[in-house]
Every structure is written in structure tokens, then in C-alpha cells.
Image (tube, rainbow, N blue to C red; front, top):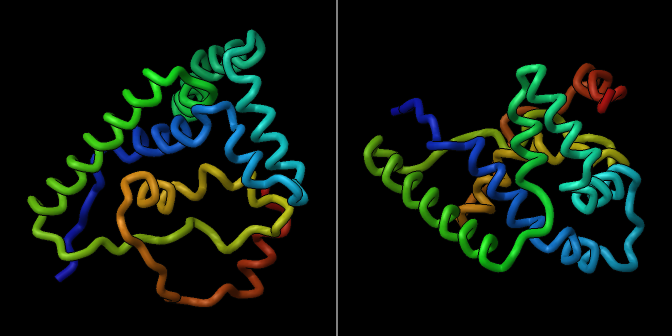
Length: 169
């Protein structure tokens, strides 16, 4: 039996993922990549994390909100260096969200959740870091420490590849 399921507060979970990932200002990510070739898009992400809280980033965030946009500004507000106290508060939020998901699964009577691993075919290697927000499905399962796997359900076609040629545009 297939049961439709809407996970609780998924956008909040994505913000928590990035908040925890960048709570040290991106230092752990850069340390893990030490000696690796870093593509420009990842460098731009790290630069964005370190610029968080600057006047320019606050102006951009405000400008986007004035245009009625919220997801980008909310994510911008979530990333960047935090205090140890804020880090542990965010961990507590993560644990509460996990409990919400577990309760929602039990209430719906689910044995498993089937969801896409990614919203599009694999992007070219030089733009993977620009794909951050498109990885929200796997980010949520990683955040909540839920096991996940992938099963192929189709194949990438030449048409799919052609559609990705200009991504990100």
C-alpha cells in the first residue's frame, strides 16, 4: 500500500543541516578537503559562509525578503559561525525534529519512506557544490541520522543530459 507522506518541517530541517555544517565557519569542511582540488563553486560557498553576517550579506538578505522571497534569506540567515551555546541549541532542535519525524511515521503507519535521492540527474563535477540546496532529500536523512539507500528506477537519457548542459544557468 502506498501512503502519501509529508515530512514535518522539511525546510526547517534543511536550515538546521546547513547551520550545523557551517557552525565553525566552514573550517571542518575546508580541513577535510585539504590537499584536494576545490572547484570554484565550492570556493564560492565557503566564501559565502565566511561572509555571513557582513553588511553586504545582510543587505542581500533584506533585499530578497523585500521581494517576498524567504527560503534563500532563511538559509543565508542559518549559515555561518555560531557560539558553542547556539551549536548545542541547534543540536537540540535537530533531536526534536527527529522525534517529530519518528512520530509522524508511526502515526501514518509507515514501514519505510520512498523518496528521490536527488531532484535531477548528476550535475557535472565542476558545479556539484552549486547543487547544495538540490540535495535536500539526502541532507535531511543525514541530519536526522536515518538510514537511507538508493535504488535505480530509470536511466539518464540523452535528453536529460542535454537539459543539464547549461546547469546552473
